[in-house]
Length: 272
Image (cartoon, rainbow, N blue to C red):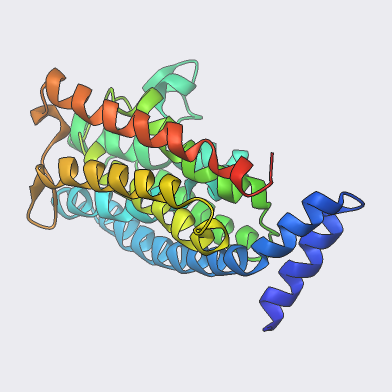
């Protein structure tokens, strides 16, 4: 076992304490959680690099380049959102929305991607965005630093698959997150891919006894991806504004079904 996996094993066993059932579950999950941490760090490395390119474009006043980089940059964050949300201060600084703040877009506490998104699409200007861009890159870099020293809680990782789907269904399907750029479908794809990664890593632990469960999950992931594929455009996706209410309802139904399945994953792995 390499050092990362050994440290993960010791941390999980210690965290489980005298609970034999929890300890057994934690030991089973050592390998997939260690692999997931590697995945998260890889995504965060890309996220830091992409954010630097994005913020450089903002600071250079290159509106069109910044717009083109906004959605693809955010995908890495959306894939690992359950881990990012463990650091609530950074998550708020990086990814909060205007209505999370008392004065909405005018609130000085409204920073991060969506504040820059507002400037690029609504104001059609980068005026005043340089310090916000600098802060965003600093916050993203700090997130990468904190995650490197984090022991990933197994229940948060496994539960994260359902959380990603639930957030899409409950709040994102309305289009409220990327409300200025309408790049929501990129975020959805990041969320779906992040959830699927978790499923794939834990699958070998229970696949034999839960064959029907994984058959259903795979079918529902395929359905969601088929729906998303309808809206592909070049390397990305069409504006979310182009989806009708009926289109959004179809997508919401598929995501809700998937969320219901994934909500049982923690219990199946002995983490409830």
